Amino acid sequence: MKKEDYIAYEILVKSFKDSNGDGWGDLRGIISKLDYIKDLGVNYIWLTPIYETPNFDNGYDIKDYFTLNNQVGNFSDFEELIEKSRNLDLNIMMDIVVNHTSTHHEWFLKALKGDKYYQDFYYFEENKNNKPPTNWKSKFGGSAWEFLPELNMWYLHLYDATQADLNWENENVVKEIYKIIDFWLNKGVSGLRFDVINVISKPPLPWKDDLEGDGRRFYTDGPKIHKYIKTMVKNTLLVEENLLSIAELSSTDITNVVEYTNPNNKEFVMAFNFHHLKVDYKNGDKWTLMTPDLNKFKNLIQVWQEKIQEGNGWLANFLSNHDQPRHVSRFGNDEKFHSESAKAFGMLYIFLRGTPFIYFGEEIGITNAYFDIEDYRDVESLNYFEIMLEKGISKEKVLEILKQKSRDNGRTLMAWDDSNNAGFTVGEKSWIKPSPGYKTINVANQIEDKNSILSFYKEIISLRKTKDVLSLGSIKFIESPDGIMIYKRILDDNQIIVIINMTDKIISIDESLIIGNIIINNYSDLSNNLKPFQAVAVEV
Ligand code: NOJ
Image (cartoon, rainbow, N blue to C red):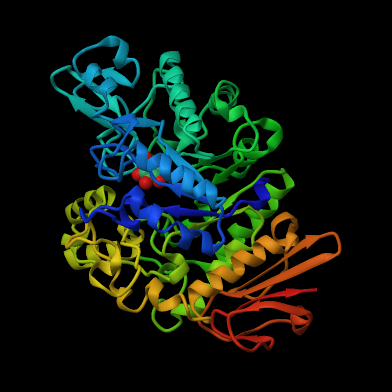
């Protein structure tokens, strides 16, 4: 398969389908839903981490890379999943987390016992002045250093204190990582998603305080990053063609993304970036309330699409994932225009140049969680809950912020039907609640309905597969009024114009843009006065 043909579906394993009633999603649950996934039209399934883990960060804290989390299943379930997926032409993709391990990993436990060989696997620093070695901040709040009184040392964690950063300068670490990659590729997975892979290259020691920020400028796309990646590809089975390798990139830039994904460089096939989603971060701060700035959103999508195309790079396109709120609530209108806005934003990114990544549940329009504090589970949300209270923000306000910003908004249960726990489990309990609308927003309710969000997603996915221009074509943006995005996909003599009203207002566009064969429309009629969240594609 060519990269242009990939269409991926991300599954947060613990929230998708629980087969044994323990309240936790599992591999057998996924196996039972393979026909549903196949029917959507996708061809890649990305599984969030399924390794043994203490689960402080959703499995992104790995205790053992060669053992499965027994809540999720065993190797015989895994092999069955690979085989049954393959029979349906579905590929399985794993999450590889190698910027850090859990502090429960045996390497870290040995380091804690004073073993120098394993201390060198991480960043351990002697305590000098009873303060952290640098002022760098953890991305989950607080210092990026944790003190170990028994050793009188500090260790680095760019994420949670239970996720210690690995030292990629140490060849022994790198060798272990290559073993992990080959182990999983040999098991029959066809793709790997590399978690926060652009922060693995730290600057040469000694490290300094960051007087302008939180330290990220020192290690983001760090000094040796491209060398590390090229060497990793050459020395593992990643060197084989036909594998999907994806870089997840934190705070990156266009130049680096081109370098990571231009096929001549033999690094990654594609990359995720997050700039287009940070349009509701007031002055760069996630933990504030802000209505998304749609002009900024439109501009970022355009600039990234155009520049990545110019550099012959390739993007993984998405609007929701396990770290983000649900986009129908964030960018759309999940009350008055639930169906229209879910369809419009789905089409907006699925028709872009690049590979679409559909996040489970968006195809039925699952909304944010709108939880009370006792329902949250995410480590980042719980950390920031305390941090914001300490800053003097009232509890009501903090809860309002979490309702918009928490990662748990995207982690609620898949809604299969309107029964208890949305049909996610055969048992009584689940690790998290479903989003509140599940009584009506569920698969059973939409599967037969030709006008449902689910049916619309199947239609756009099918168009993405049958119209070569949508997968292979180049992209060109067309000037449009505020609130509207218009782009053209072009392949030889074929052209498709994609027009999206991203607002709840009626907005007029140039009449000439809608002349042609309308291949899809989320309303039953069309004029140049686009209705709220109207989305159409016209073949010209
Ligand atoms: C990015 C993952 O998507 C996120 O869920 C995780 O918390 C961090 N990386 C740390 O592994």
